[in-house]
Figure (tube, rainbow, N blue to C red):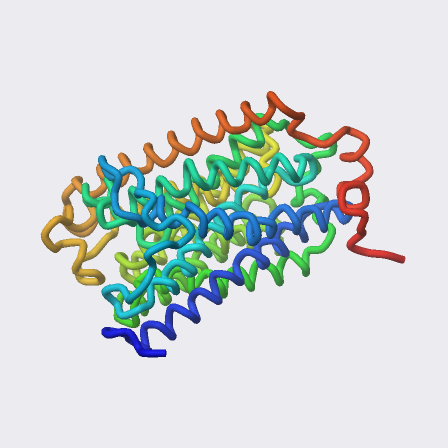
Amino acid sequence: MLIESGFNPTNTSFLMLCSLLVLLMTPSLAMFYAGMVKSKNTLNTIMNCFIGFGVISLQWIVIGYTLSFGADSGLGIIGNLDHVFLAHIDGVNDNGIPHILFIVFQMMFALIAAAIITGSLVGRIKLGVLVVFLIFWSTLVYDVLAHMIWSKEGFLLVRGGLDFAGGGVVHISSGIAGLVGALIVGARKDNTSYTQGGAHSVPYAFLGAVLLFIGWLGFNSGSAGSVDYVAVNAFVVSVISAASGYFMWILLEWVIHRRPTILGSLSGLVAGLVSVTPGCGFVSLSSSIIIGAIGALICYLGLSFIKDKLRFDDSLDAFSLHGIGGIWGGVATGLFASGAVNPVVITEGGLGEGLFISGEFELLLEQLYAIVICIALSAITSYVIFKVISIFTDLRVSEEIEMQGLDSKLHGENAYNP
């Protein structure tokens, strides 16, 4: 086999490693989620989370990639159909990476976005309903946002908006979809929070969260697309923001409840990671400390408000952590983006540095505009998809199945046997 002209082995090896790390995120999230539910729903939670590996991978190959990264169809909203079933895919990109590898790397993002949504719906949604929803949501929401924000001709990218690794594309969109789903499908009959004894295995959740953290480093640094200073910066600030969020959550629980918890601290870890994701290739180390700490604070308050005041059964806090954290991350990018970290911020076509760096509001306002679009598209589309599905079938399992447990009733398996 001839080596393609322009092939860069270093960048290719880097993206292969990052693809592997991002792939790790989906089963790790399944473990994290599964540890926080009752034992009778352990396997169903894992299945819901990981089923996207089969379903969304195929959707990505058939139509997702071309809608996301195909040549623009007009208005910068969606790609054309030139690459359906990955047709006309050859050569390398500008970083010397084979296009087929770039496709797989981006596919991993689509997988984790779909998996996040399932955390809001555990313990009551039908598996078939979830599969149908994820297929249509990925096509009508994720692929559209990926094109608008990441494609060279994308509407929001051309306007100068910044989303380095998926604050809007992945986290806001999935968090909002999870919230809409939780409201439409309704609360569990026994909606004991994982923080109030609903978690059947805290060590299991801890292992899943740590593996998720490790995979996340490939998620963020790999978005640079090559081995350079920006990739290194994304790696380092992700670690720092995660540590900052983790410690902030512990402090909040210590001060408010006098009882710091493992599961709470893991929520802080995730909040810190989500918050820095959109700006990890644009913000400095010192900024990442602030971003992670404030992200954990905002997510903590949002989670408490939703659980204690609004009584929404966002089962495993997909919206509280990913939705709210993603929104803050988008705002934080508009506050802390620095040309010293990434020159693209101040090059021609860029809107300049963040408010706290330059004193200018232009980038922040554009970030707010993009956030509104992400929220509106995911919320409206998710609502319509769930409502259309409900015309043909009930969205949730019967009360008998829900109370006895989805593992044995739907899958004929139990996570733990005598």
